[in-house]
Amino acid sequence: MDSSRKEQQQDQNQKESKKKRTGVWVNGPIIVGAGPSGLAAAACLSQHGVPSLILEKSDCIASLWQYKTYDRLKLHLPKQFCQLPFLGFPENFPKYPTKHQFVSYLESYAAHFNIRPKFNQSVSSAEFDPAKSLWRVHTDEFVYISRWLIVATGENAEPFVPEIRGLGKFKGKVVHTSDYKSAKEFGGQKVLVVGCGNSGMEVSLDLCRNNAVPYMVVRNTVHVLPREMFGMSTFGVAMALLKWLPLKMVDRLLLLTATFILGSTDELGLRRPKTGPLELKNVTGKTPVLDVGALSQIRSGKIKVMEGVKEITKCGAKFNNGQEKEFDSIILATGYKSNVPSWLKGGNSFTEDGMPKTEFPNGWKGHEKGLYAVGFTRRGLQGTSSDAVKIAADVASQWRSAEDCSNSCHSHIILLIGDN
Ligand SMILES: Cc1cc2nc3c(=O)[nH]c(=O)nc-3n(C[C@H](O)[C@H](O)[C@H](O)COP(=O)(O)OP(=O)(O)OC[C@H]3O[C@@H](n4cnc5c(N)ncnc54)[C@H](O)[C@@H]3O)c2cc1C
Ligand SMILES: NC(=O)C1=CN([C@@H]2O[C@H](COP(=O)(O)OP(=O)(O)OC[C@H]3O[C@@H](n4cnc5c(N)ncnc54)[C@H](OP(=O)(O)O)[C@@H]3O)[C@@H](O)[C@H]2O)C=CC1
Ligand SMILES: O=C(O)C(=O)Cc1c[nH]c2ccccc12
Image (cartoon, rainbow, N blue to C red; front, side, top):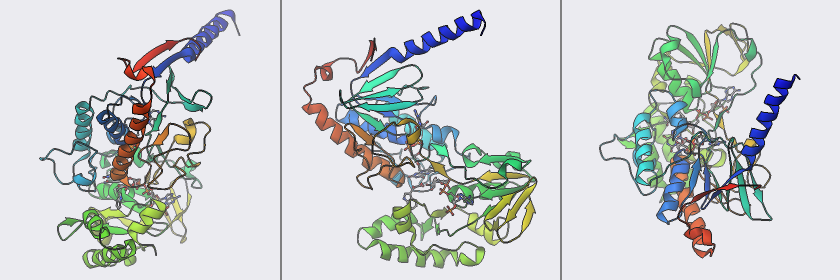
């Protein structure tokens, strides 16, 4: 290494080590993630008079919704099931708000509760110091320190990309649905859509409505339900029935009605799982497809249903039933995964898939002191709200009982210089 590079390197190292020593004491919980879950947790804490600090890796709130979703996305549950605690959607919003309306709701939510996340703070690691009963949370610039850590990075933090033989050989474009915006760039193309969850169905629908030809891979079974039954949302009907009837019976009623409205889906290549849709969601987290039009396009042949993929080739794919077909592009609608194992070090609260080890409804509280998880219930935004309320009450009771002088400080973040 020549001397000027050595100096540069030393400079860099000095900067790095200085960065590492810049500590920030947070008087109140540190929340990682400014999606709906992080915002809901901060709002609920503020209702108890507890300050908090949200660290967000992106440059805005709800980055999943702003950057990682397609243009025509709407909530597929009615707005009353997607609102966060203490502030509902505006009256004039439609029953199923668009993603832009949802983001604007979240922006007013943050403003209403005076929530100001610290942006561009990607948490690279966090660990508990049992000797001091403190959490140390590292970003590029700082070490944030607090008695409480609330994990709010979401179930959909990273795209899940399965290993599919030959995928690297494919000459055309390959994108995950988190990078799909619209059908514009796929006009006139034959597109292989891998996966038939809500993303696969809705992207296929978008493609076929915009002059592309989607071939959707269904390797397994899938529940498709109409979004509405006799003018009421299917989800709302299910929630109402669950107040009176056992889960299995509600599932049976939903399936009977779905077959009445949609007809049999089996003959379209969409075989139903043996377990009912709500039971399956509760047990495995697999969300039933709420149909917003894809099914009629499958019936008319505009969306083609394909068997599982055996192998991707240079120009197309070979399927398990021996069929082989050429494609221009591939869209992976293969779902998402949590990123918690990549940054939360040690401890015994999360599985290797980054989900709480404790089952719903108790997964909000971690095993380590001061650790919480919001939005890992596999129950959408309703799960988020229920976690946020419980976490805030739990932290608030500790906050109130603490005779820690820091609770009466004016500022809730204090810069610490020195060895932390
Ligand atoms: C396409 C789509 C549609 C959906 N529609 C619905 C619906 O209609 N109804 C419903 O109830 N649910 C729906 N869901 C479920 C969805 O999980 C929730 O709507 C919601 O976004 C979850 O909020 P969250 O805050 O837990 O996670 P996210 O919205 O993913 O927010 C997590 C935040 O954490 C940040 N982050 C991640 N890692 C780090 C790190 N290391 N350091 C700092 N910040 C980090 C991210 O940048 C992100 O801003 C949908 C999901 C998807 C993918
Ligand atoms: N409008 C809305 O509100 C929308 C909501 N969402 C929500 O976002 C979340 C994520 O949904 P989504 O992105 O669809 O992810 P999902 O996890 O729901 O679905 C992933 C799909 O990919 C399939 N898959 C995975 N690996 C392979 C493989 N190797 N070969 C073939 N198929 C494969 C799965 O099949 P298998 O079942 O066999 O594993 C499944 O069909 C859900 O909660 C969903 O409800 C999504 C879009 C729109
Ligand atoms: O859209 C999602 O990802 C959701 O998790 C919303 C949701 C929660 N519980 C359900 C049951 C049936 C269909 C959707 C949902």
